[in-house]
Every structure is written in structure tokens, then in C-alpha cells.
Image (cartoon, rainbow, N blue to C red; front, side):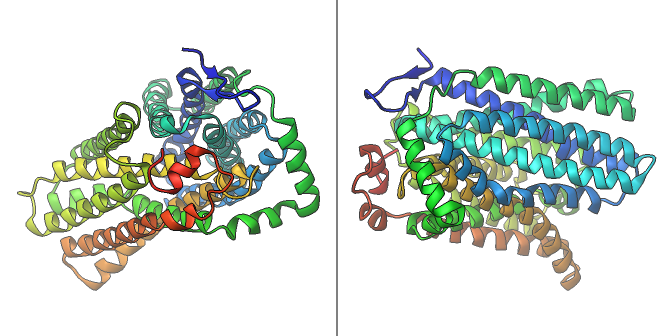
Amino acid sequence: MAHVTQAVAGAPRMLGWLGIIRLGLVQTALGAIVVLTTSTLNRVMVVELALPAVLPGLLVGWHYAVQMSRPRMGYGSDVGQRRTPWIIGGMAVLALGGLGAATAVALMSVHTWPGVALGLLAFTLIGAGVGASGTSLLTLLAKRVDPTRRAPAAATVWIMMIAGFVVTATTAGQFLDPYSHLRLVVVTGTVCAFAFVLTVVAVWRLEGPGDPVAAAAAAQRAEKGHFWQAFKQIWGETQARRFTVFVFVSMLAYSAQDLILEPFAGAVFEMTPGQSTQLSGTQHGGVLVGMLLVAVSGMVLKNKIGSLRTWAIGGCIASAIALLGLVVGGLIGPAYPLTANVVFLGAANGAFAVAAIGSMMSLAGQGQQQREGTRMGLWGASQAVAFGLGGLLGTVAIDVTRMITDQVAVAYGAVFASQAALFLIAAVLAARIDKTGAASRTVGLSPAAEGYATGVGS
């Protein structure tokens, strides 16, 4: 199958499966750099350099904060109507930031504060690179993927990003031993260079020329209104605003569990570090199952068992049920089937996450035209802020509840229950994205967009 097909004369070229996989390779490259900077460098700072754990936590949190610039980057790609320069440029910035972060860690070993300063600059570049490349990639998918393929396309690129995590962590880990700071810089630099080259090869001539008419119209609006007017227009759209809040609440609930599940397994179920790590692995396996389930629904069953909107709602409800299961499991103790519960939680999380990304792709083209990148940037920024806050709030909540009660299971149960409540709120918010409000704004939309707005498309 050709990687691009021309659906309608004069319309943008639509991506076939080869084109989707090529964009998935960009996600793989992005994941390869991110996993080194957020996991490996974190461990080196805390273990090898014996620095406070709060330092890498603040640096990672800062890279999420920088991603609040995503709407502005998306707006820039809207004006030019081409996403490829932003994808390649963002990856170049990300690669430079990744190499800078490894160099900063090496510098910290001899000059702590200059190393921290370099680390702050490097993680600024990492956040900017992820924002520019990731936002433009999703926008290109939203504009160039047929609505019937959006769920499997979203699953494909996210699975390929996870593959980037796994392959990089496994391969780079072998070359890092025996450890030295020089090895860290060389291995990280090699991964960053490979990721950049892979990105350039993957997107080369994929997008094609931009739409000159749309670019001229977007540039004219940019001259008149500039970014903040465009941002206010999008925030004034009920659909976009509701979806932004949904992304924030759901991703806050999704990320808050990351840093407390393994400690919960160890403190309540007396699992060893190795056993709790394996438990985390089974959760990721469940995530892949959930993603594949939504993908099969869209690709094979043509969403006959539910639209993306339905999957998002159902995934949030199922995630809440799984978290409440952990509350019950904490009270029962080691006899409870914890592994099965965690697999179910992962599957529910994976289904909701892919459905949310697919919905994001569907909704990006609704409302004011030539604003797809700005909308995608707004939602990406909402997700980044939620991820940055989620891990922090989850751990803080555990500390607070442990101060209130000395019963460990009750403390963790209270936090899991609050996360379940957030998922239920997210389900309500997803339900409000919106049959009636969207239908009233379907004039001038494509048939596919009209289908989603009335709850039957995509």
C-alpha cells in the first residue's frame, strides 16, 4: 500500500499505513531520548552522585512546565501550514538538550552548581523540543489520517514510542557498563544523534508541499490577530475548552498513580523490589492490551462496539473501578489478586489514553479553520502540566495521609480512592464532549467531523 493517497482532488494527501508507521518512528526516536533523560540520568544523579532526589524531580518537572509553550508552537506551524520543519527542528532541539543533560550530570560530579545550571538549560531544551516535535507530529496525524484509521493510528504511534523506551533502556544499559561519566555522555550522544537521523529519514518528503491558500489565509490572520487572539478564539470554543479540562483531569488521575503503585505493593503486599518491578511491567503489558483493543475496534470492527468518545468514557470508568479494587486489595492484604487488578488497571488506562489521543485528532479540525496546531498545542500543554503535577501530588498525598493515619493500607487506599474520583469526573467531562454542542457547530465541517460531533464518527 502506498504511504500516501489522494482522497479528493486539491485536498491534502492522506497518510496510508506506511506513512503512519513513519510518523511512529518519530515517536520512537522521541521516546528514546526522553527515557534516558528522565530515567537513566535520574538514577545517576541520585545513586552515583548522591544528590538529593528532589533535584532530578525538579528538572523533570521543569521540562513539563516548559511544554506550556506548546500552543504557541502549534500556532507557528498553523501559520506556515507545514509541520515537517517543526518536527525536525524540535527533534534537533531535543537531541541537543539530551546531550546537554548528560554533559550536565558529568559536570555535577566535579562542579555541582555549574552542572545544575547546565542541567536547567538542557531540560529547558528538552521540554521545548518535545513540545515542538510532538505537537506538530500529532497535528500532522490529525490532518492527514482518515477518520476510520485514527484509533489504530493513535495506538500505533504510542506503541512505537513505548518500544523506543524499551529498546533504548535495554540497549543503552548494556553499553553503560562499566559505568563512567564519559560513557554516559558518549552513549547519550549516540542515541540523540541516531534519533535525529531517524526522524529526518522518517519524515523526508512525507508531508509534501503545504496548502498555499491556507498558509496565506493563516498568515493574514496572524498579521491581524497574532497568537493571543487565536488562543482566545480557541478557548472561547466550548468543545476545545471542555476537552482541555478533560485532558487535564484524566491525565492528572493517570499520572498520579505512577510513583506510588510500587511502594504500595512493597509496603502492603510485602513485595521485594524485583517483584514490584515485575508488577510494574505487567501494568505496562496491560496498557498495551488496552491500546490494541481500541485499535482493533477501529481497524477491524470499524468501531462497531463504540466510538472513540465511548471508549474514552468507558476507559475512565474502568480505571476508576480498578483503582477502587486496589483500595479493597489493601484492606484484604496478600491474599488479594493484586497482579490481575494491576493488569486490568493498565488495560483500562491504555484504552482511555488511546481513545483520548484519537479524539484529540478528531477534534483538532473543528471550529476556526487553520487552527489545528494551536488546539493540539493547547491540549498537549494541558497534558504536560497534568503529568508534572500528577506524580508530585500523588507522593505528597501519601505523605500527608501517612501523617494522619499509621495504617499504611488506609493511607494508600485514600489516595487511590481520590484518583478514582478524578477518573469518574473525567468520564463525566468526556460525556459532555458533546453531542448537542458539537452538532450545532457542524456547519461547514467535513462529513467525518460531523460524524464525530454527533457521537457516531471516528
